[in-house]
Amino acid sequence: MSNIASNPPTDAAAALLGDLRAARRGAVALPALQPDSYARDHAAFEQLSDQRDLIADHLAGRLGGMGDGPMSVLSVGCGDGSLDVRLAEGLLRAVPGRPVRYVGIDPWSGSAELFTAEMSALEADELSVDVHVSSFADAPMDETFDVVVFVHSIYYVSDVGESLRGALDLLRPGGELWVLVAPRAALNALVDVLAPPLEDHRQWFSNDVHEAFLDARITLDDVVTLDALVDLASSSDEALDFAVQARLTAELRGPVRAYLDAVSVPGADGGHRVPHPVDVFSTTRH
Image 1 (tube, rainbow, N blue to C red):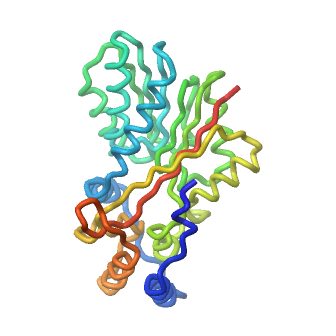
Image 2 (cartoon, rainbow, N blue to C red; image 1 turned 120 degrees about the horizontal axis):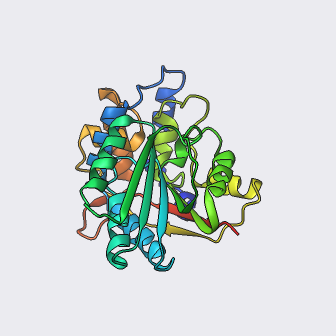
C-alpha cells in the first residue's frame, strides 16, 4: 500500500491541521455535498488530477490480461461512466466481436443516466449495458461477473467486510474483485477533520479496507499504489469542497488552502501539487 500515509507531515502542516481540528471541535457539522453538486464538483476535481488516467491505464491493463473471451464487469459506484466507458471501449477494441456485459450501480439517478448515455455513445452491438439506481447492498443482482470493481466507492458502504463478501459472491470462479480506495494521507486528513459524518459511520480508507480483508479471511492477490497528484493551488472553491468532502465556509477556505500548500510537492512543471494516491486491492474467487 501507499507509504505516503505513513510519512510524517511537516511541522507547519501538522500545526495547520491542528488549528483546523481545534476550530471544528464541538462545532455543528459542515453541510454535505448534495448529489447533483457532488457529480459536478467531482468532474471539476478530476480535471486537476492525473489520477483518473492512471486508474484507467491500470485497470485496462488488468482487463487485457484476462483473456479474449466474453467479459462481464460490475462497476459499483459507477458515477457518470467517464471511467467505465474507457474500459468498455478498450475491451471492445481489443477483441472485435467479443460480447461485453457492463453493469453499473450508483445511488443517484442523475449519475446513472449519464452512465447509460456514455455507454450508449459507443454504439456497439456487442455491448450489453444495465444500471441500477441503488446502494450496493440493495441492488437487485441476479447474475455473476468476471470482474467486480469499486472505484472510490467503498468509502460509503455501511460494512466493508460485508460488502467484500457480497462482491465475491457475485464473481464467477476465477473472477476478480478490485477495490480502489485512498489512504488516509495528507489530503484525507482534511476529510477526517472537515467532512460531515455519514449515516452510521465515518468514511473508510485503505487501512480499514485492508483490515476488512484480513478479518474476512479473504486472501489478497496484491495491493498496488498509484501515486497521483492533484493541482489544488488553482482549484475553484467547488473543487476544493469536493477534496474535503464538505461545503466549506468562507472562514475555512484560507486555512484549508494554507494546509494544502504546506503538504504540496513539486509537480513535473514545478508547480505545487498535493499527493493524491490510490491503493488498488485485488483478489480472485477460487
